[in-house]
Length: 462
Ligand SMILES: [Zn+2]
Image (cartoon, rainbow, N blue to C red):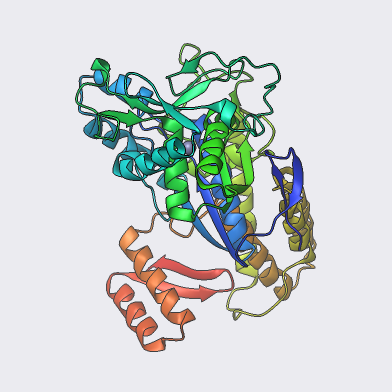
C-alpha cells in the first residue's frame, strides 16, 4: 500500500506517511458560527470526513481536532446586528452545525475547541511573535504580524511577493489575495465590539481569526502534525497566515500536508438566495432528499474538482442508494445463516482501495465499485453466484459503506437500542460472552432482536 495526497504546499502529489507510525493527527478548520452552514460548507466537511474514514479504513488511528470560530469580525458584527450576546448568539449556530453534522453521519472530532475558551494560548503565541520580532504593536494597542519579516511568506498561496512595497496593514480578518499586507494578531477594543473583549498585556481587545487556528491546532496536536484541511477559500489569507505565525513563533515545521477541497457549485453557478438555490441540509431534507443522498451527492466527485450540485443529481443519488440497498438485500438473502467467515474480500476491493490511495480518487473508486456491482447482479441473474461470493461481497459492501455511509443499520432504530447493540458488539469482540448475552437479553426485553451476520450485527424488531 502506498498512499499519496496532493499537498497544496508543494502543488504535487506526495507519498503520505504520518509522523508517528500508525497515527494521524488531523486539524480541520471548523465553522464560523455566525450563520447557518450551507451545503457548500458541508462539501468541505464531508471531504474531511471521507478522508478521516478512509484513514481509519486503512488502519490508522486518527486524532481529529476541529475548531469553532466563535469570535471574529463576522460573529461580532452579526451578534451586534441582532442585538444579542455573542456567547448566546454563537451557541445557537454551533448547535445547528452539530445537528447537521450528525444528520450527515459525519464522525465527531476528538475535540471542538472554541476560540473564546483559548484566548490565553493565543496571547502566549502573540507574545512569542513579539519577542522574536515577527510582530509589532501599533499606537492603539493592536498587534500586527510583519509579513516582510518572514521570508517564506506567500509560499502556500503562491503569492507574487516580488517588488511588494509593504506600506500598509489590514485589520479585517478576510481580505483579498491581490494585496497581501501585515495582518492583525490582536485587535484593540473598539466601540463596535461592545462588551466583547479580553484583557491582554496590550490592553483590552480580541484575537484575529488566523491566530486562533495556529494556537489551537498546536495546543491539541503539537507544533508539528500531519494534515491540515479546509476549503480552497481558506488558503489565503487564513492558512497562509496560520502557517507564517506558527512557523515564525515556534521555529519548527508546522504541517506536513495541506489539503483543500474545491468549491461547490449549484446549478452550474454560485449558490444564491435570490435564485432560490441556496440550500442548507434541512432545506434538502424537507424536499424529500435523505441525508444519505445529500452525503453521496456531495462526495460524488474528486475533492480537488469543482462539484456541481443540482436537485436532479440528488434524486439520482437517491436512486443509486436504493440500487445498492437492493443489492445488499440480495446478498444477505443469499448467505442467510452463513457463519462469519474469514473469506477474502473480492479482488475489486483492492482496486477500490488503490483508487482511494491515489489522492482519494473517488470517481475511479466508484467506477470500480459499480462495475463490480453490475457483474455480481448478472451473476445473480444467471444463478451462478456462490454463497462464499455473496459473503465476501457483503464484506466489500461493509467497507464501502464505512467511507460513504449511505446506509446504516441505525435506520428507524431508536438511539438507546443502537447504543446497547454497540455495547454488545464491543463485549463480543472482547470475547466477554456473559456481558454480550446479558445485553442480548435486555434487548429482547425491550422488543428487539440482534442477529450476527457476515455484514455485522443486524437489529430487528421482535
Ligand atoms: Zn482555521
